[in-house]
Every structure is written in C-alpha cells, then in structure tokens.
Image (cartoon, rainbow, N blue to C red; front, top):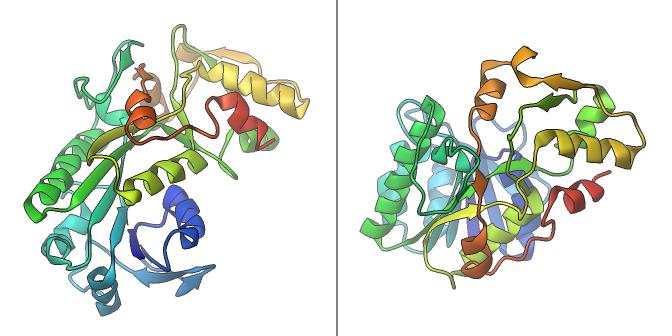
Length: 283
C-alpha cells in the first residue's frame, strides 16, 4: 500500500516517520521542501496557492491507496481540494482519506461534556473555515465513493512539543481561570487513530481524538514541574495576564470532549489516557 500526505507539520511528520511500518511507500508534501527525502519517506513540493502542480505529486496521487490531509484551510478553503479535488475523486487506487481537523469547531460549551453530535459553534475565522472544509471532504467521499474520516484533534503534545520544553526554557505559565479545562491528545495516539482509519474496518465519518481527562491547564504545569523537580511558575490570574489574541481565544472556549466513539468504534485504547502518562513519558 502507498500513502500520500499533504502538509508535513508536527503531527503528520510524526506519523510519516512511523508509517513505513504500515505502508510500503510514503510520499509527503511541503510548500518548499529543502530536501527530497527525509528518513524513510519522500518529500515533494505542493503549494495550493500556485497554479503549477509538480507532476510527481500527480503521479503519487495516481498510485496512492490512502491520503492523509494535514494542510490547514485559508480564506479560499482547503488548498488540496482547491487544486486537486477532481484528481482525488478520480484516483483509481485511492480508497481512504483522513482529514485532520480540530475540536475547535465546537467552540465554547461552558465546560459541558460534548461528543460528535454536539452543536458546532466556531468562534473565529480559522474554525469557521474548518467546518466548511470538513463538509467539503465528506461530500467528496460520498460523491466519489471513497472512505473519508474527519479526525477532530484536541490540543496536541508529544516529543519536543510539550509543557516540559516550556518549563525548561522558562516560558511556562500557570494561568488561573476558574472552571477552565483543556482537552489534550498525545501525538502517538493520533497516529493510532490514523492507522485505525486506514485499516478501514470502522465506518467513515467524524471522530473526536482526545484523551480521557480534560484538565485545568495549571494542573498540568504543576505536575510537569514536580516530575522535573523544579519550582512551578507562580500562579497568575487569567484576566490580568497579557496574552496574544490567539492564546486568549483558547481560553474563551471551555468544553469536555468525549472520546467514547474513538474508543468504541475506531477501537482505540490510548497509550497515554491522561496528561500524567503522557508527560511522564516525556520528562
């Protein structure tokens, strides 16, 4: 089996490095890759804003059994669909498409538990674009008779990208906003979910990919500091702290995201069911 990945960010890069255990050939795209090979996979250029498409990308699509889409949307929609929707629909071997989205599409639910049937309340342009693109990918799947899985990811962490690094470089904060919780997922468990989709035994559709325990952000910082044997940063009231608009927007959304469908339908048992196991493996 052959895999084509659009958008080699943190999560897709982690998956690509592992995918050789599942796929005989892995090809990934970046807007302007510095090299044409990285580890066990091939890199090719792809820019959804350009009128030119590298013919090697079209060749890889024609040979692909599976596609992973990690490229984010913009004001014009999904860059992959914008340039390649017809070719994807007609790809002769392509059976399965996994689109990586975000639980941000749910917006704020006042700390209540939500699942895949909950109302979507996107609160900014980024998440409104995501809602539209999710629908476009699912519609392509129905039209072209391909299995399309939309994975709504919670806050991603893993090697090189966690509170551990922030504590070590002095950028960690312990912001206190009463009642606030965040949802998290270790990148290795995202990889599990992607593999389950490519296995094709679960029905296509939307799945939340998140761990078992939404938790207050300050608790995670305190726990990580204890593991490292360092003093946690001082508590700061959220309202009195200067933050970027994006960081502040995260605190404007409060929800507890259920992973019941991921567990029961995709058949995923998280390797890191809470932040404790996940951070413990990174410290």
